[in-house]
Image 1 (cartoon, helix red, strand yellow):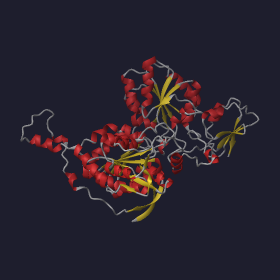
Image 2 (spheres, helix red, strand yellow):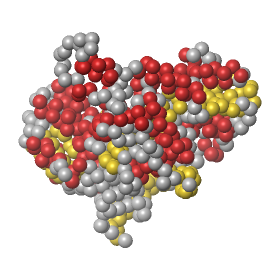
Image 3 (cartoon, rainbow, N blue to C red):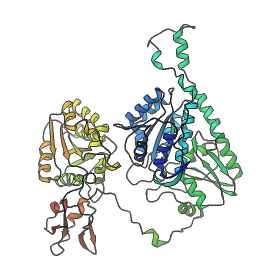
Image 4 (spheres, rainbow, N blue to C red):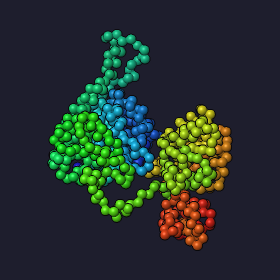
Amino acid sequence: MVKKILSGNEAIAYGAAESGISVIAGYPGLPSTGIIEAADKFENIYCEWSSNEKVAMDVAIGASIAGSRVMVTMKDLGLNVAADPFFGVVGTKINGALIIVVCDDSGREQGDDMNDARHFAYMGEVPLLEPASVQEAKSFVHVAVELSETYCVPVIIRMTAIVTHSQEIVNTDEEYSEKQHSAFRSLYAAKTIASTVASFPQNSKLRKSTEQYYYDWKQRYKDLSIYTENTKLNNYEYKDKSIGFIGSGVSILHAAEAFANASIFKLGMTNPLPEKKIREFCNNVSKVYIVEESHPILEEKIKAMGVDVTGSELFKRKTAPFYITPTNIYEAINNVDLMPIKHKFMLPMQLPANCPGCPHSFLFESLKELGIKVMGDSGCYALNLYPPANSMEMFLCMGSSVNMAHGIEKSFGKSNCVAVMGDGVFYHSGINGILNLIYNNGTSTVIIADNDCIAMTGGQNTLASKCSIEKLCEAIGINRIKIIDPYDMEDMKKTILDEIEVDEPSIIISRHPCIQKVKMKSHNYFYIDKEQCKGCLKCTQVGCLAIAQKNGKMSINKQLCVGCGLCLEVCKCTAIKKGSM
């Protein structure tokens, strides 16, 4: 054994390597991105960033059917995209182990904390493992592989943001490699059924082949229910029997920390639930609390068993930075307030914003000045939905912008509205919307914010190196394609006004590299001449993190300023001046 300091994501990658997983596919999305980045360092694992999560799931399923042990990774929203193949494969015989790692971002500020991957496991009736620590993240991959190949079923490992980003000293074994389950070379493939319309004589070869393909999924779930009652992944410890906690992941560790003498039932496998064990635990403990992040799924399942437990009425769902913690568990149960007043205001909530100098800021400031309504998409530019930028009407999910803009047009006719998507989104699921726009005679203007990477998840490459955005748009039938540099705001505003007037679909590619990927070469910075500043606060409306108001005066942080000049563009009282480092 070799001890290493690993994050939760790195531990998953080590678990994959040790378990003989040879193919990992996924799509970048925090907090799951680090898994593939870590796994790509192992020579025996083929890793790929697929064009979206559905494609990644399809790739993994294909590799599994071929006999490889495989893993597919994604964030919580990704499983929504991959739901179609997921629900197809849960009712299909697989071959090599198929492990689905989903990282829920419970408690996040931006939009999608409503998602909870556990719902998919229950709907698909597949095993669900929930690591509570980094060491468990690695070891649970071994368990998942064994479960998948023993019961011929995909297995979901649900990580949460705290576990993915935590670091621990972990035992690793780089010499270890599991042997594939011997029963998994006898898969009967559906393609051997030669005809879609056939009669089935009692002793026919075709009938026997079809019977061989049949799989008793109900029996599989019954077998898994026996397994979950006996596995060490689910265990309890009695201490003070007047109070007890049931939970999974990091939440149950917080409960154990808050109430060191309480009885604790830690669930590592939460689907199927070990109902007999849970009843036994609850029968022996006077008051049982359920602690869980996000939706009250465990609570609802346990209450449906007729067991009296307490959960969501005490532990309300909150957003970051108000995750479930030992302190708020203790406070909720004892109805006390332990946190001193001075600490309650030490970490003021700050809405996320684009980096200083971000090309998206120039684009959205131009759209705001023009008074154009924006249907947005998921990406860095979605931060312009929030104050102080306030320059986006709405965003839903990857690829939704062009479809929403098209819906507005078909409802009210040609309007002062554009769709904005990123280059990553364009390749992920935006092309379908543009095709739909062309086919249904839409005339919307689509702005593709091309910053040469998937910036919000760490700057991973898009497909642009092998597939040009403009050439692809031209190939599918777009006649009007304009390429602009968002730093040239006058040209950008003129181009946008021209394109929204035309009576056909058009594409504007706002192209400038991500400020984090390609640092600006300028050594200039900007400062505010306090004598000339009239306090109009116009400069604060661009959402630049380098601009701040202190003691009633505006200032620009020289260390954060990258010299992009956006503030100079919007200042009407010529109070912003250029300096040189």
